[in-house]
Length: 362
Ligand code: IPM
Ligand code: MN
Image (cartoon, rainbow, N blue to C red; front, side):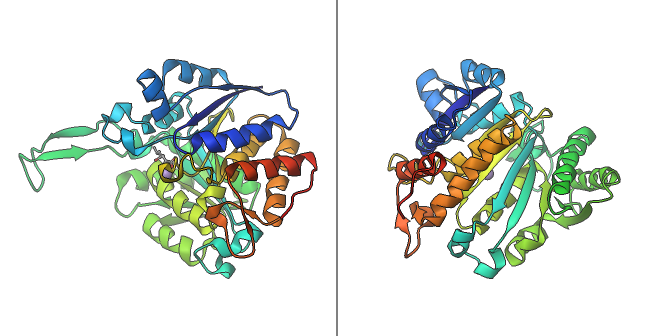
């Protein structure tokens, strides 16, 4: 099984190194090959997603991705910015289904900004459509306005669009995921204003007819943002478009205490996938050895489960993460009184120790 390892920028290199360490102790027939991506690739090869990196990702069974982005590249023209690397990988690999679980670990209930009783036992799965919507719709650009409030003025525009097959396939992913979980899907839209999302709602409703055992509710995105902080445990699977999913998944992640805990999977139609933490490159803490590697380590577990068909190995990683949390080890993002503050590497070592059966000292 071949895995393309793309650490990227900022804390990406530090956290991916820990996930690689964890994969290496599992004694599985994994072949890991690393390549540059994002700002690091621009600096080394003049492009955020060099052909060689894209080819490696295409040839691999799965991609383990860190994070991309750094302030120093913000002034580059859009096509050369680090973010284009992840957008390009999603598009070129056809990774249309983004699974972002928001799970509140028992030991971290108090790390949430919400009252503990609101988040204790929280287990939501956000399913974000990842290759359509206003992120990729054409045309887009800048021009001189011919109408609107200020004819003759400079203006910018993007295109929000979804086709029926794009909505159908992500709806199937959501209903099938719900079948394995709490049997409820909340489809988030803005059907009261946007034609694209009235269509979304109509198509999701049609697909639902094939899943009578799953409950479907529709919710406007503004209300969903509110309900997520009011009563998050009422959600099971949330399915939505690319942009709403981007926003709501950050919100849901924070309910669990730290975005540093949350993995994600981006899958194509054959469950081939790219696995990355839900958080970004965090340039403010890069190189300091304090980033939480658990989201990336848990992403490696998702990779073993979804793409590499190694559920036992995934279980071993997830149990090890629970064990280090139970032992009281905390990176600064999840630290609280009475726990032990550790750095990125120490956290990775502790997960390795838990997997290999050595004792962890709390
Ligand atoms: C994410 C990120 C990306 C997105 C950026 C880096 C392009 O925010 O994966 O959520 O907007 O999809
Ligand atoms: Mn995002």
